[in-house]
Amino acid sequence: MDASAFNLSRNSFGKLVLTRGSGEVFEEVSPVRAFPIQAPDDGISIVLPDGREVAWVDRLSQLSGEDRRLVEEELEGREFMPEISRIHHVTSFATPCTWKVSTDRGDTEFVLKGEEDIRRIGRQSLLITDNHGIHFLIRDMFNIDKHSRKILDRFL
Image (cartoon, rainbow, N blue to C red):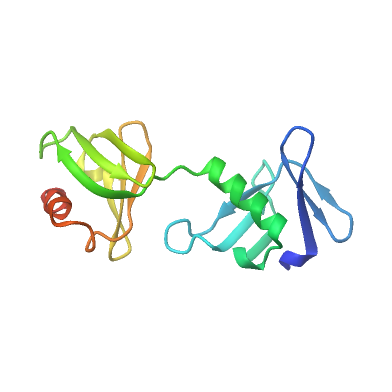
């Protein structure tokens, strides 16, 4: 479905509502990224609570200003994936261990349960899952500072 063939709004409960050009209305829809790490602005599915897709957006830039704002707002509320910019310290090179890091959302520390919780995404990205299931992203492990890279090398 063409992105111009529908409009988005919020109902009185703050839930997202999609209205097609034909007048058909879908309550409590949610946007879902098809490729959240490698192409976050490409391929957005608008789905119902049961997972059924009611609209597809090829590129986020295709949406009107208000529709785009609503989609971005909804995605931001659902997705939480801090991006690690620096690894300050790890308590041990054996797991479990505590990592002290800087992210795009501030400094934090988390527990890495096992080396299997560090996954490669493509050639240069890493996804690290902490003991609470929170995903941390290292977008480009080759461009991170030397100290952080040295720590990463011990785990890869």
